[in-house]
Length: 322
Image 1 (cartoon, rainbow, N blue to C red):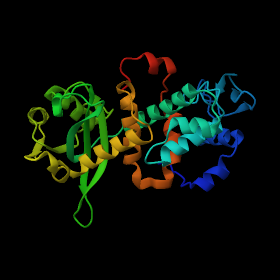
Image 2: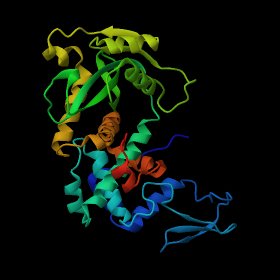
Image 3: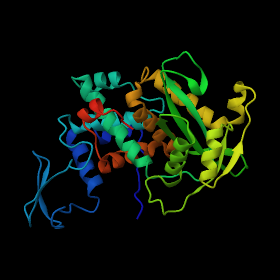
Image 4: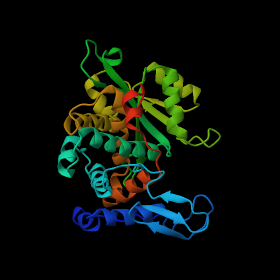
């Protein structure tokens, strides 16, 4: 049975999640919609220890934290502050400043707010990784970061990002964007693009599942041609004699790239290459759910409840945070 998500305006959200107790009750409902089930023995009766936020199984006496297995596990920040951060990250399509959220939520340490936001982004990335793109896909690469001495594919001191968006036709026959995906890569070689196509076509599904991609539309860069051939896909080449025509000939992917750069330059005031993938995943997550409007908070809470979390040390010391 598919999950039903509630639509929530800001006013309704404020009333529903005004304190920690209400947020705790909601989290329990999200984790166990049919009632608590002991993960150790499967028994469905337990005592709830409200001060410790634990379920104590009446059969095997295993104690289960309501936050175990979620991004909230072992947090010292009140749950209602998490909920408010998640609401803003879900609903604000132009992104939110973590400095501003730290101030609004009264979080003493910036690193704490920063870590909370990255945990939410991790949940976004993991949820989108379950989906694949299908049919016609428009692709291009772009560079994010400091300005180098070269332009184009030889640019220095920039982070290369492969971008793709699936396309469909509406009832009027107009081409419209569907699902988008962006990935930080080391180069634009055919092997890298082929790996990206595998990610787009299968997501996190086993490779024996059906490849749903059919046609790739690009600017004709030779690496795309070789990668598409190896994947047995059709290749629609759009020849760009004038770089300024890119936005007209490959309209949807260039619009997504431009909007992404505006968000990164705006709310986030720039992003380091080390954490760029997390921000790209956040932007793509909201774009992919733009038609669900007021359901976005409920959808993101469910992603946070089921996601594998990330720690501060992993974020700070890992060389690659994709």
